[in-house]
Length: 109
Length: 121
Image 1 (tube, each protein chain N blue to C red):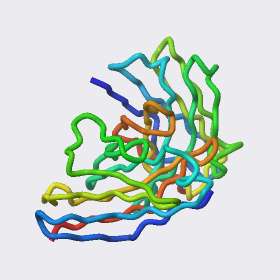
Image 2 (cartoon, chains in turn cyan, orange):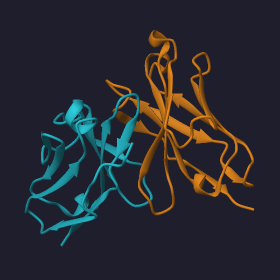
Image 3 (cartoon, rainbow over the protein chains, first blue to last red):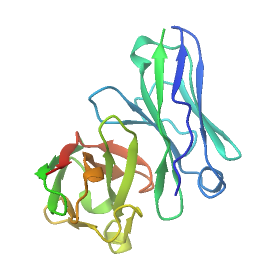
């Protein structure tokens, strides 16, 4: 399975909104409601931010939202805050496996 | 509180073997699928393997990159997940995470802190 495609970087100023895309195929993103997004700060383990395309786990701020259109999923961070600066990874079910995106480094200007 | 604590990492020569363990606590271990995910230095995440819960008879799946070389197992009586790694290569060098599957085993809701495996002569 090929990795999902994410932009290597994204940025925004505090208070702005930023959207990170994640492009796959009908064999992964387009075929399963099992798209997730993870946040990883330097030196830390990843943290689940969005599951099943749009669901926000308990404790995740509602500034984070997920969506999907066809074979592309998106993570939107609204009202950017300094602590949102991190790497973000998407993942999707792909048959009996899981495929990740290459990651996007989000910079808060 | 869910806790996942990996152990067993270290330096190993190419072609060698290593066994990773993960001690789980804070949840009913037997009812969750458990995964291993790795991250090479400065690189992204790579899913490696899953072992299902007791309800699906501990079904296992592997990524193509490790199939035939790595074996995942679990001991529900000891709340322990393991990964037996053999025929190790330099590109297996990575931080290895023990990860709990959430509502679906393909959603990773809790992660350990990771254990470093370095394959080098």
